[in-house]
Length: 420
Image (cartoon, rainbow, N blue to C red; front, side, top):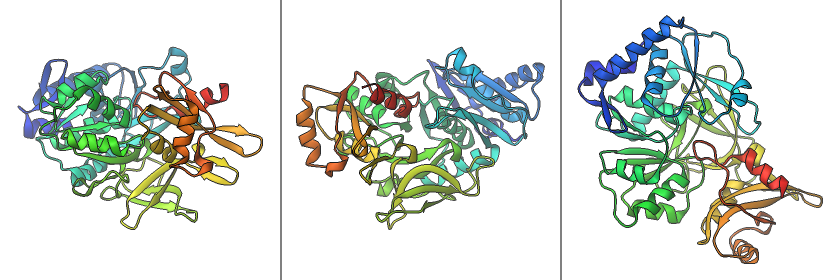
């Protein structure tokens, strides 16, 4: 199979490819590392159509294994490093498949039942091409690799760096102080969820960053205050929306026109439409294009709710499963969360439904907050939200449950609300 590492080695052999814990591999060295893993996998019986499971956190060996599987025509199946042996045992067993599948990623969404999403070489190539058209595909780019390689965000970053001949500063895990150091050491691009960005800004203080070209923000709403702080700190942030089934990015703001109010228009080559919109234009987001996973096209039903404006820019409201129906009204958790995050005492917040005998469901806020009482929070929310959107209860926690990529873990969140 065509390997982007091999191509990068031929064109950019002496250029840096991967940086990790003080060591740098050139593309020529990366090519040799991948070739060595290919031989190891062959010795273990891996062939075209095989499935290779690997449970690991971020490290170079995981990167080499991903590309080695691609050379062999095998499918790379990374497993979340946080899963217990019992959880790993519950993952579905997927038999040998087509050799055009490059990665088969486990995802459970809101159901909690794992499923395997099959992404092909063509899906990854289309993703890299679309990203280059939107954000540039220069070999001079250096991406900060803090997103896990067992998720599509991490793998997509790794793959497009190989396609561009760019470099990735891989981190074993996200650490705000270390991220600040990396942004000062030649990193030009990064992908964060809002909480990661907020921690970087807190650690950084007043000193601005220099040389950053783009910072992708996904996985949840970003407050206007955070947007202003980021830009003042020299971080050109662009909001994005994506999912595993679409090989990462579906929409991303255009850098020159980014204002943080939407997740931007569809990526080049991708189509987005809203199915069965309500009176306000909100409906289920559907996606079509060459990045859609095997067997899920031509139109992928995302189960996410959103709205397109007259410029084709997408605003995300909620997963359909997370929609709160209260007295016949729709409440979108993301909308309420975005408003509540503007409160100066709220450090983090997530909103979930609680069953109610009169209204069917009511919104409940799970918050990490300073010295402020519930009555004050309710009064503040009523000034900014329609009455049916105001949380009926405020549950205090030390931290909002989040998954390995920093997104809100809606299953754990509902368990907190149900137990209250």
